[in-house]
Image 1 (spheres, each protein chain N blue to C red):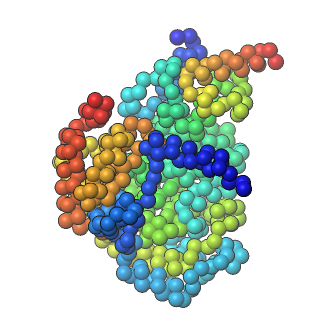
Image 2 (spheres, each protein chain N blue to C red):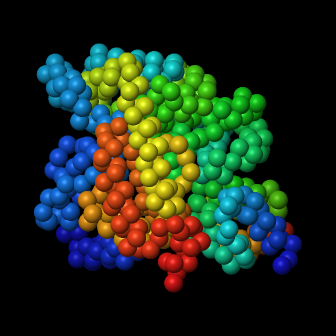
Image 3 (spheres, one colour):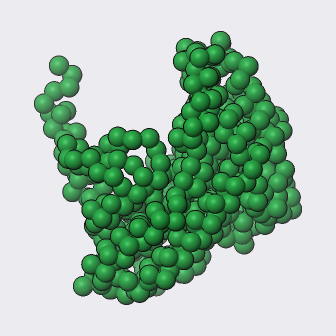
Length: 87
Length: 415
């Protein structure tokens, strides 16, 4: 697991998994479609990513689908990191 | 024709999808007044049968109380049937303001404004009182009406883990750059029946300069020694900035809700809350009934005391029968089954045994947290609860779940 994947996964566990909830979170665990992260709470994840990786993810791209697994979130961050660099 | 066959088929497919997912809701027709025993026609067209009702919000048993009915009749005679107006045009009668003052006194706040429902109060409050310079920090299990209200507001939205005060504190620290911070919570959580940690929340609000907003719909009238609500129970009476609550549950159960709290916040709602501005005034008959309810519960705590005894007794019966319960000390007592299909089958079997209870599952509660939510009322007598537990035991035995904990229940359902 690379650094960014680990950071995103750790944040999700710390931020969203309620004490006593024994669910495992892997890179491919559905987050939003499983109800672990609701669309409302997604906002804090978006803010965390933008702050941590100094990127701006437009609302149109911050969709529940794009945030549904750690894998997809990491891909999204990478896409916008590249966009920032080339801009 | 705009509603073409293709459009119709589109909706039919969507409805079929709801059915296939096991999420289709059907109304049961009740042929009697709301009470601990009701006459139910279900499925529609079948014979009417008498059931013990353990799923209503009629916490104090006042929905069909003779004095409330008489007061409503008198209100109907003296103030008419409807207002045919919103409040600020020609929809405010003397009794509307009288009820708002009575609610202010009862809840220990500075002012109150009636809304058509608490759903409307929650939907309208945040847009009226907060803007893009502010932040709303909500418990993750707040009621859907608050979620809708937050969506309509321009203020930033954030959430904290259910009842996790450490997590809330982190969020308050994080948002110190905002103009106003508002903490949002239910007083009693409707699905789990647990109580918000209001004392700690108020202390955090003081430390981090935040306001506290509580939806006390499942508490007003019976939580706390004199039934004022969660703020009384937690020892922070007068310290909560905004309370929204309903007349549609313990307080007579008809309809209507309110925002009660700091004078300026209530005034902002009067000026800007759209459900208040663009909905009819609460009907006089309901206002008159609610005034009588406040008379009844302000003079004696007998009903909330009986409700407390019933809740303790019912919880004990369920526990000793071997059901897995959510911990708590309110009249909402969820029987945990975890599996959605089991919850549906269990509720159906209970109905066959003459007990009316409802199964709740995702998306109403988190996945894997399906349950039968039971709710106590002061209208229940011991014999109702003794009969209901017989039905629960019989159905529990049929499904082989008595004495099983979460892991065993899940394993059984997976097998």
